[in-house]
Image 1 (tube, protein in one colour):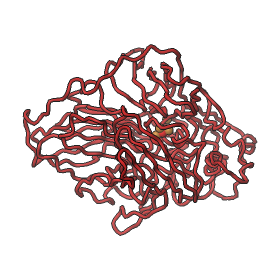
Image 2 (spheres, helix red, strand yellow):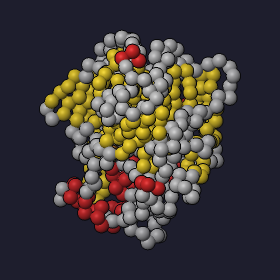
Image 3 (cartoon, helix red, strand yellow):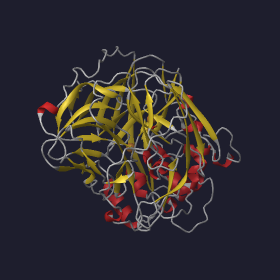
Image 4 (cartoon, protein in one colour):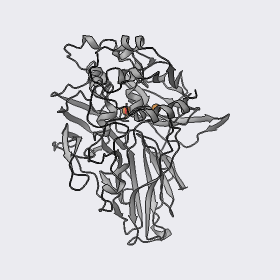
Length: 545
Ligand code: C2O
Ligand code: CU
Ligand code: CU
């Protein structure tokens, strides 16, 4: 049976929910002091979906048949708010000190209901961390969740032992301090989120993610009003609870019926009277692709993950922002009185009888007070930023992304993998004749294995191959890269735009070449940033020596 047909059948016949409790055990392998975890040894060798169901336990909500709240359940149209700012407890110049508490918390999303979320300092999304290039940063994480967690500083050049790797999980009830100093050259919009083994998807969709803004020493565009838009995804059941992932979520990555901007449902942004704004947009969703468009307007692309690009790209009708990516765009009033910032439909090749993600409005923009006219267009510096020519690479690597589905796996096989017997009556993956895996170079993640080796300071060309039927956003920790070329369906495009990225999207059967260099010794992760795929093992470890 073909993959899609088989999965359509599966989706139609199962109401399977995946519990997260057993995954706690997986994540605990990453804690410094673990007790009684011997029984879990070997769990991490089990790639793929099977580990989910094999130890499934009951968890509130989360069936594929959970009744969802209608999209009208969340009020829309409230005034746009900027993200809450994490206060700096230090008064010393160039020093940022603060605390983030990850804990269950209550939010009123649907009027008259409370929703239990997991949040940093009780805020959805997590508060904005405002930093400057060169800052010394000290942030304490207190884990008040019932499961291990870490904080990963996505995209920032942070020492490996401070970067929230799955192997350095913070146990429930424990705290730790993350310390790092930013280089003088770093700038742009970044974000922080949990990275425990097997639990990242749930921790993020329950609310744990927040933006980080790193300001450069000099910013020629600072007179233009700036907005930070942190986009998160939300699924709400009819009773206002956040349901657990379904099997289809595990396969395709979770997308709820809502996308929020700075925690708000479709806010109304009153555009600056000057007629021009710069928007910095973060895709902090588990798996939702944001094909951004503002009808009647075009975007001028100013920056990507790593901040300013070399030359502004004008006249863009749409921009695709894959999960974890960021952009900075310039928007100018055109005379229309209003427009909606859209995340337009995008077909990323989801499995099963699942249609492409439908279009939705992220926010409305009221231009009625905005001046229109060329005189309002600030002259953009040319270039926006200097880019030194890339050094010649001294090594090459290849990472191949695959989805695999083994059919007809017997009960014996499943029992071998069952480290803990399940006693509940709900159906488990035992009942399913399949074993789904998302792999890199044919392997599922293993916290004890080194997959690739690099040398500090050595420039390398990485060839990333998506040998699968759906899009996967590829991310590497600790550094950023430039995209050299993209190849798909026999057509090769050399990328001339110079820009820094830490996450690059690959369409089905696409190959992307990037040039990359790591600056510090230690273990770095690279993985698919659809968080469900990451949790299922589409992740590897790079040892920088
Ligand atoms: Cu956004 Cu491995 O991270
Ligand atoms: Cu990262
Ligand atoms: Cu993926």
